[in-house]
Length: 241
Image 1 (cartoon, helix red, strand yellow):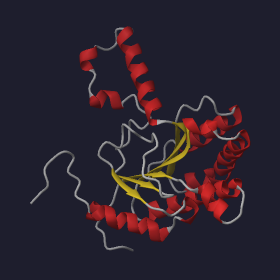
Image 2 (cartoon, rainbow, N blue to C red):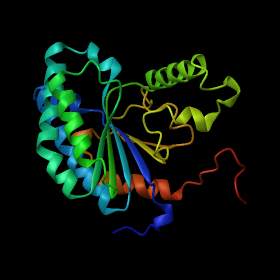
Image 3 (cartoon, rainbow, N blue to C red):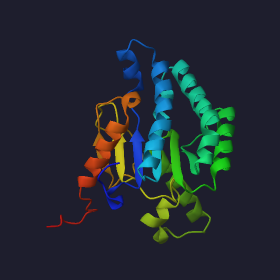
Image 4 (cartoon, helix red, strand yellow):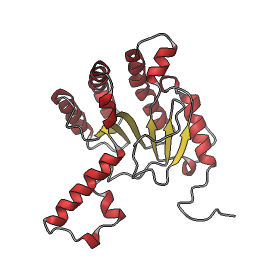
């Protein structure tokens, strides 16, 4: 274990799992091998979060913009998500994990949508751990969808514009019932948030590593936790002297 008190640990970790393709290229392998390794890594990191008392994990798996990638790669990723759900659904449920996919999802195949609904329904009453997979997700798109839903409520006469505030707006977001991420980890050496959870990460601590996602393991995970524990989260207040 690590010398960090429970109060110093993040409750909610978000991860941009970047670097699968570069990991594979470095080894002379195809990008599909890298993506397969990346999917396998989700299980390991989910277990690490659970072991160290982190209650919520949100992973950026496929963005709205990723549809622009070669069709063959997109098809492989979609098949990979379905294989992951087939393989992990019973274990997720056994461990008390509530699984959710956040994103627009309407462009996903009917078979993948059905599988997602199956696993979400199976685990909907679980409360020990929360795993959110962002597929066909974009932070700007999430905010737009929430705004459209609010506008419809105003037009129908169910809501006055003056009633809209931060708390109400959040109720129209994908993660409306969960706290915002405390820590955002990005692998692969890039220094940007790539349209991920834009509303939710207003006060989130960021931790970037050059390590590619398939190589991200317990060592890097503990480094992130230790670094987070040293930080003073002020939420707009002045530093405590």
